[in-house]
Amino acid sequence: MSTTGISSWAVDIGQVGAIYPFQGTEFILFLAGVAFWIIWHIVQLRQEDQTYEDDLRHLKDPEKLERAMRNQKLE
Amino acid sequence: MDTDIGALTVIFTEFYYWITIPLMFLIHVGFCMYEVGASRRKNMMHTLMKNTMLIPLVTITFFFFGWWIYFAFPNGPFIFEGKGLVEGASINAAPWSELMGTHLGGASFQDGVTGDDTAFWARINGVFWAAFLLFSWTAASIVSGAVIERIRSGAFWIIAVLVGSCTWIIDASWGWHPEGWMVQMLGYHDAYASGVIHAIAGGAALGVLVVLGPRIGKFRADGTPRNIVPHNPWLVTVGLFLIYTGFWGFYVACNVPIISSADIGSTVEGATPVFTATTIYLTPTTLSAIVFNFLMSLSGGLLAGYMVSKGDAFWTYSGGLAGIITASAGNDLYHPIQAMFIGAVGTVVAYKLHHWVERTFKVDDAVGAVAVHGYAGFFGLVVAGFMLWGHPATAGYIEGGATINPLGQFAGAVIMFFVLGFLPAWILAKIMNAFGMLRIPPELEIAGLDLADFHDRYLSDEDVTRAEEEEARRLGLIR
Image (cartoon, rainbow over all chains, first blue to last red):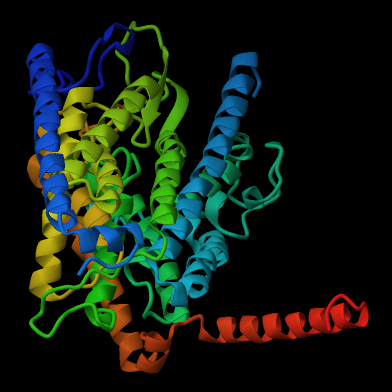
C-alpha cells in the first residue's frame, strides 16, 4: 500500500497519472487552504490593531510624539 | 552521442546543469549579504571575508576528495551487505582521472576507464561536479551565519572544509544517491535536501555553537536573551530574497532533466519507453511539480512566519526559507496545498524551537540557522515519512529497494542532524577550543573584528584629506 498509489516502478509510466499522496482529497485540501488564507487575514488584522494600539499609547504623550518626530528614543 | 536524440539529450543535460550553477551562486551572495547585514558595524568586513573565503577552500578540497567521496561511499561504513568502497569510483571522480579535465568523450588513455565511461561522463562530469560543489558551499555557509562575531576565521574555514567537502558529501553518498545504503535499506527519501544539506548543516552549526558559546552581552545575568539588532535590516532581507532566488537553481540541480524510463527501470515488458525528469534517486517527477511545490511551501512558510513572529521581517523571511526546507524532502511528490501546510507547520516548529533552545540552553544562533535549516529539515524528513509512506524510495532498476516509511525517515533525520551534522562538528570544535583556536580574544570581540581595518581606513582618510587641503591651499582655494 502506498499513499501515492505507486508502490513499485514496474509500471508503464506513459500510462501513470497523478502521483501525489492522498489523491481524492483535493477538494478538502482546497477548503482547508482557503480557511487558512481567511484565518491568516483575521489574525493579521488583529495583530496589526494591537501593534497600532501599543504605538498610539506612547504617542498620546506630546513629549514622546515630539521625540518620535526627531527619531529619538521614546523612553 | 551517436544519434541525434542522444546528442541532444547529452548537450541539453550539460546545459541544464550549467544554468543551475550561476543561479546557485546567488545563494552564496545572499548568505554574504544576510550575514554582513546581521552583524554589527564593527564586524562587517570580517564577517564578509569569513564567508567569502570558504568558496576557494571548499572548491579545491571538493575537487581533491569531495567528489570522489560521493561515488566511493554509497555502501556506507561497510553496512550495506558488507560491501566497502564502490569499485570504479575513481573513474570520473578522482582528481587524477582524465575525466576531471577537458575531454571529448572518445578513447581513454587510463587503465580501467572504458569508452562507455568516457562517452557518458565527458560532457556531464564538470557541470555535475560544479552543481554538487555549489551545494557544498551552501552547507558550509549555513554554519557561517550562526557563528558570526566571535569565531576565528581560521577555525571556521577548517569547519567549512569538514562540512562542505567531507560530512555533507558522505551523507549525500549514503542518502542522496540511487544506490545509497540509506535509500536502499531505510527507504530514505529527501528529494530536495531537507536533510542532506539543511539538517546536517544545522546540526553542524549547533555542534559548533555549544562549544563556541554566546556573543558577549547576548544574555542578561538572569539568563534571558538580548536582541542583538542587525546593523542593516535591508541587507538581511534582500540577502534572504537572493537565497530564495538561488533556490530555483538548487531545486532543478537536484533533478535529472531527461532520461528514458527504460534506463531507470520504470517500465514493464511491452511498454513503450518515454522520457521523463527524475529526482536524484532516478524516481520520476516533473519540473512543474517542483515549481508548484516550491512556491506553495515558500508561501506557507512566509504566511506562518509572519503570523508567529507578529510581522517581524527577519523571521518572516526566514519563515519562507524554513517553509521550503521543511517541504523539500517530498516536494517531488506532494500536492501543492500539502506543501503549503507542511511549510507553514515546519516554520512554526522551527521558530518555537529556536526560542526555546535559546532560552533553555543559552545557545546564541545569530541568524537562526540551526532552526531554519536544522529543525525545519529534521521535521520535514519525518513528515515525508508519513506523507509518502509506501512510495518507492529509489529507481526501478534497483531490485528489492525499500519504500519510504516514517521509521526510515526518522532514522535518516537522526543520521543527518546528529551523526553526520552535530557530532563531527562538535568534536572538531572541541579540539580547536582545547588549543585556543576557536574563539577570538574578548578584547577583540568587544572592540570589533574590523578594528585594524577601520584604523587603517581612518588613518588613510585623514592622510588623503590633509593632502587635499594642502593642494587646495596651493591653488589658493582656501587659506
